[in-house]
Image 1 (cartoon, rainbow, N blue to C red):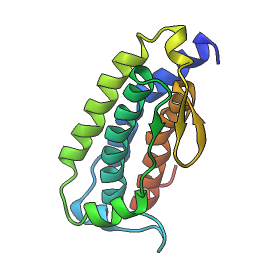
Image 2 (image 1 turned 90 degrees about the vertical axis):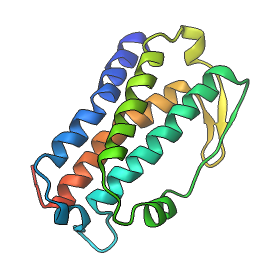
Image 3 (image 1 turned 60 degrees about the vertical axis):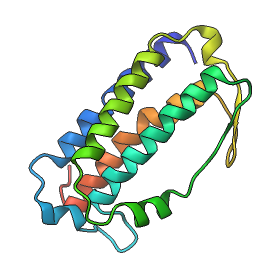
Length: 156
């Protein structure tokens, strides 16, 4: 991956919070718990998942940058969504998503070429480095914003 590709992905990563907020614009509380299909998450579950995931992702990148050959632990995302969402308001989770992305983007924009090549291992998927991390998380919020729109019945 070259510097221009990274810059494009970092910009997409930075934009993640905005697209989630846009997908939630005008949401009524009752819409937060609607499912577009029995096996789909609700908008509320998605927002809380994004907060959990982004806080985890922020730590993952920091481990890659600081530790030698870190093992990046996976976690049971569906269990988190099922047990930790309930009827909680979404405002704090949206703020956590925003803060994690802003602080992490500041790191991404300052990384050296050597930083981008630091190796690690993901407990579930194997070799894992900051470039792989960026590929995953640049798309993550955008994919979930689409899921929120589906749950709300808003089709583009």
